[in-house]
Amino acid sequence: MIEEKVKKALADIRPQLQADGGDIEFVSVAEGGKVFVRLTGACGSCPMATMTLKMGVEAHLKKTVPEVTEVIQA
View 1 (tube, helix red, strand yellow):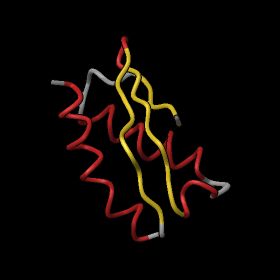
View 2 (cartoon, helix red, strand yellow):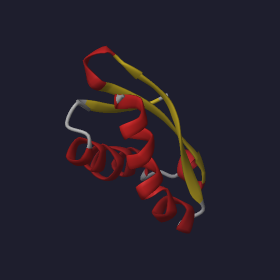
View 3 (cartoon, helix red, strand yellow):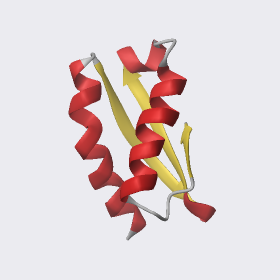
View 4 (cartoon, one colour):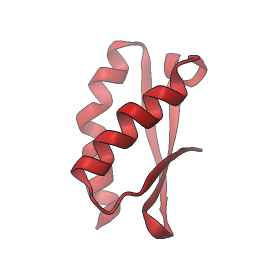
């Protein structure tokens, strides 16, 4: 159930990442609400990737899927 919510939330923000030449892939959800994702394309090698992951992706997921506690780059 949480996995489907996370995938939907990622689909919502994917266009913003793609507009900058990047993308995001869902990897898995672990116990405790930890979500593992992979930033690809321009986002994979961008020096701002950590900020994008935490301030953008993690903030959005926590807001839309309350079960999410952390987003981690896989």
